[in-house]
Image 1: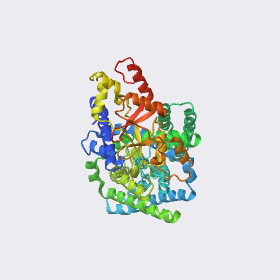
Image 2: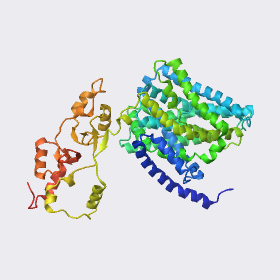
Image 3: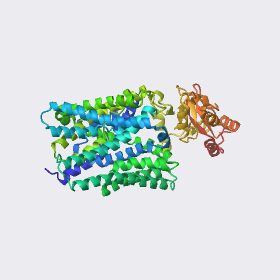
Image 4: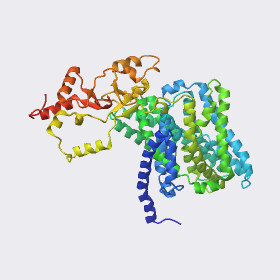
Length: 582
């Protein structure tokens, strides 16, 4: 029964409140993930499950599907990030052996999933031989997709780098491409042989349209990438560049709609073209990627809200469990077989298999294209994939994190080196005090306190770097263009500031693995918080600095920084006061 306008509007009216609740839970969930060392992706998916039909049903089915537009846009951004990861530096490291490794693994995943599922489906007598074959083939090609959104976010979260990480990236790109193309090919084959009802044109036209879709998508991605590379040279503000990138990605999806291209292939090619056609393309891509990955939380919430366990588990049956078991076995054995064939020395086969367990993203996009079909085989594929997402998206991030740590490929921003930078502490009472002062309702201090205290002049919203941070982390810190570079210990005690000349000297060394932030300490001058203004002025004039750190009087705990200009302005304002000291 069709819903009336008022009922439809009720769902639309609930979208913004539901999204607001979801984003706030994601914000809290990030802290929870950090505290308990859990991948953020898993937290976001659990939030989606809790808010969706499985949980409190704040995200109703109609609302979830109405947000598919956002999901498509997010997938475009994610595929752009994957394509952009294949810059000239990574391409130089990708040799023939690693490419063969990835291709071999993808092939084995397809064959093993197809074989195991087909054999296990024999226990379900409700399907004919032809239906089993069709379902097995379609699931086999979808099974090679390894959830680029989930996998990429976890790898970025832990700054994964190494041989296994490179093969995972190759697998993500090629696997996503082959899953999309393979699903299109099998759809046409099924229609030609009458397994599925033929929709639209004749067989020859369908094949030509498939070729048009693939070639056109790749061509459109290249042209848009070149256009973006040209345009970014006209922009100087990163916020404008960010807007241009998002606009071009969304425009690529518009082209896909009107010209029958594939939006995911366009985004993948677009990112690849950008980083390899522009000298600053990689820098732009890295900045965009760091910003973009932080806003994908809603994508995973929606993925979790798609999971409706009350309906999916009863309908899962033997075939659903068969697919889950078949895919787990296929990625494990495929990685081991590929290792034996092409890379025996790397010893990454076991970890690589569990690294690509995640299974959402392109898989969702593929099943959405056949969800409207009435054939039993098509609906079975949709049900199996939607149900299996719960298993793979919960197990996948944990398995990937475990394999990255075991392989020793977690970088400076991973959990073993977390919190290398941190902000100075400011209590809620201090924040309230500042607010009251700025809006003019705080009580006036005594004249003596105003004259002699520097507390109100100290800038406390300052990021410091820990003494045991690696040189790579220090470089990332310096790249943020802060005005001051304090180094602190575990107790937040000020040790000194970074000497830029020493930093440059160490950066020129070949082996910098032993260099820590504490080795870069230069000037250690600091000002205790209760220092009178006349002494503060003397310290600035003696050392010739424009900014100096402020510490607690007894503990040297880093409080913030004091700018010379702020002191001079304060002195100038009070120079006519009779009680001014100094």
